[in-house]
Amino acid sequence: MAKVIYLDNNATTAIAPEVREAMAPFLDAYYGNPSSIHAFGGQVAKHIDRAREQVAALLGAEPSEILFTSCGTESDNTAIRSALACFPDRRHIVTTRVEHPAVLSLCQWLAQPAPGRPHYRVTELPVDAKGMLNVGELEKALDDDTAIVSIMWANNETGVLFPIREIGALCRRRGVLFHTDAVQAVGKVPIDLAKMPVDMLSLSGHKLHAPKGIGALYVRRGTRFSPYLIGGHQENNRRGGTESVPLIVALGKAAELAARHLEEEQTRVRALRDRLEQGILQSAPGAIRNGHPTERLPNTSNVSFEYVEGESILLMLDQHGICASSGSACTSGSLEPSHVLRAMGVPFTAAHGSIRFSLSRYNTREEIDKVLKVLPPIIRRLREISPFGRDKPVAAPRG
Ligand code: PLP
Image 1 (spheres, protein in one colour):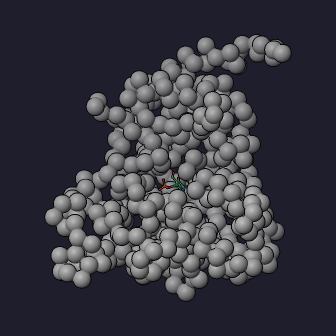
Image 2: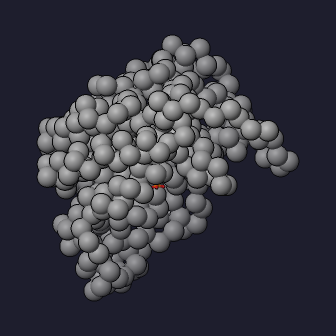
Image 3: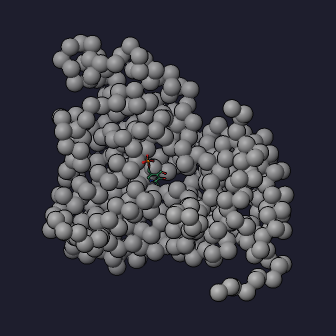
């Protein structure tokens, strides 16, 4: 396959060569079950311990506070369901309108009345035009019935970083469990859970150069916890299921590399992102940045191109081997603008033409310059043929 310019790292990332190398022996010679009594199986258990230490080190946590899961979605679901199981008398969940479906869809499902299961009240906090949360709104939403607050660390579409320390401190004062979906934040911004008032945190391997199918949940020591997958005694009785040793080892190695490259995310990757964003804003007609200008992940840029359809831009970029993603999702034949941009009040004409560029440590300046050469003519061309182009009269609606 021809080499692509991959700017869709918030969707998934390439497996780091060091990660592939670290996991390979566990796909081959070391295939034993870590719970076996025999030495052949038992010998792999220490590699799980090592991976747990590596993940804990990236987060400033204790190894015993890390539990391996199959993905970010499982981590999010486990955290929320655990809180509901541990506080059965509380029937209120607080989250935000801009969460990933791994949190939002679960909360919306829990809010639907259904026979045979409890029915929860869910508060979805709004965000402002920059995608930022107002902690005052959270304070107003909390009550004695609140079982858990689940608020993401970084938004996957805009990269906006929420004030996690302030949110956690408020939850602690009010005696409410605080879970954060940090799937997009881990490995991109420094995280030190020893100093942060966070009770549970989710992460996902495939967002930090490990393979798909592995995640982790941090559960602060002393936090009440109820397992989601009930089965064997794995993960210290907190998640049943034979451990995927290759994937766990991969996540450990990816965490170690992420810690090593954290500085580079803040400097080189951020500089590339800024070069891309400024170049686009200066040269492409009708370009507007979505999301907070500074409280943002260093790798993410979300830009709207007014009066142009995001999908068309993506298809034309794809012809040049450039991968990005759009803020709209093709749901049952209709192109719905993203729930994140809608919550921010981005006008329909701009939300439809939004593109997310998300970089990684593997991107180069040459790649960014190629995008800056290719993109502006694409936008100009699409605006010319757009029925909603700024300079064209908009046809009267029919019927
Ligand atoms: N949370 C956020 C913020 C995400 O961006 C994603 C994936 O895009 C997830 C959760 C789900 O992670 P996974 O794909 O590992 O289930």
